[in-house]
Image 1 (tube, rainbow, N blue to C red):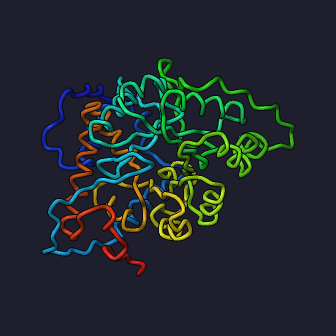
Image 2 (cartoon, rainbow, N blue to C red; image 1 turned 90 degrees about the vertical axis):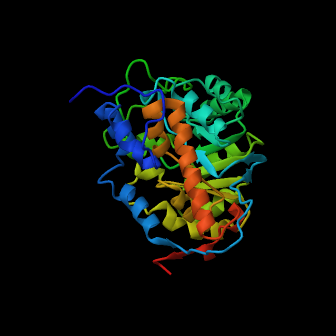
Length: 361
């Protein structure tokens, strides 16, 4: 293997889309780090399905519409954002750039957007939100039991995080990496060791899943905070109904970017029925598979209130730090604006189901 290329200090020439950052990022990351970022679980069926479903949606051009003064602004949980693109919670961002999550936070703010910080961040919650210069969102993983989970939640609230995204779809981590000694989940306590298993017991059922959250834990968590609270990792409409009935403010339709259960359906395929089930009683955000502004438009047309992007902004981070992340956001927003203009759409609320044609129609 050749030597890794150094990080850049300026945006490279010739970048036309977020995907153009992909080969530049790969040249700057160790193979193990690249594999951890890019590879889904199993045979990557879900990873590829996410992309294919987007390609099955057609956009309907509507020329001559008056879209002067068009914009991409949205209001979400009391905050006005310049666009509906939220940076998804990705772990250990110092793997990709020395400035880590702080660089992503600064870029999100510079572009008028939002970052959701992972429980597995490689910098402290306080350091990241200070770098951001604005309130952020926090992604909460269940911490084995209620006391540990509440401790982490309270730390995020004290630090100034203003929305909590509780991720429930990864009780078993299949995408793993041997971290360098200098990088760790610095905001988490040392995990308690698993109880000793009896010979007839299962590591899965009696180990990992014994410490996973259940519906009664979701009800308990809702009672612990008055902040906007969402559940991430929902693909079944009945689960969506339960989340909203428990008083949550919204949910994120997500298959974890194809990183957990290989063979799970594409998030986009599940979105319309979940939107119908929620029926305006909470916000529905979309995650998994977005690679350009046209994808954003399609998710919004199928009912999402906003979208989360993951790997693409890390490609920018790995190449040129905060500048790269900000550039990826800007490229996605530019593509979204161009798509809106060519489909006769002047605002996010005008992006409706009638603007697209699906191969399923």
